[in-house]
Image (cartoon, rainbow, N blue to C red; front, side, top):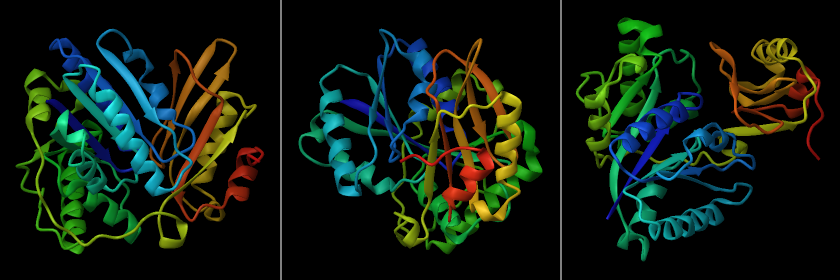
Length: 318
């Protein structure tokens, strides 16, 4: 049976970064792995961020977005069937930052998927610097993704420090309580709190074997803005310098007319190559990457596409 892991986490928490490190560790153990980018978006940026992993021991697959939830579930199931016949030791699934974890387990119980796969680990990435004022929908999302986790790993722990990290875990516990879930994480039992540059073999082995928990909570529907859910808007072919891009992206958080923005990601072409953009309210990075696509994606709540376009000096896609 193929072990299949689910790596969840709030928007911009660092799921893709963790997957890159975890996947390299698995390959160093001699395992052949598949990585499935399971995103509702029409443009899958995160798959491109993992392209350097592709090779004899690692395949990257994706599910195209732009369809309704039922269609997306069918595509997920079909992709798992196809991957089940390729001889992997382990498959890592990275969903979007907005995901119903029950969909993952439901798919694994269906014929013929259950012939090839067994649940491995459910790992939730939690940003130790997470902003204080989240909407009720965002608090619910934190709780729903962590409820069944075998391990919560804190990202940016070295930057946040123990006091702030402990406060974020306490917030997670309050979110779980509000969702009617009995799980708690502030005791540190199922938490990996460590600067990621210091992760060692024992830490990765812990993640690979942490498993998952059965946990009940009150379900909400976060699909679509009408239900108070999360949205994304994308822009193509922005003709900006790196300095202009930074100034315009950082200005999005200063303009309430744009909506409540959680993350901006994408790529920027330059004369010397591609740059990868990853931005939250607290962090902005532009890093070289082998290959990209001329796209910028803004993710958040109650987004105003035209106001965002105006701030970026861009045209809305037709």
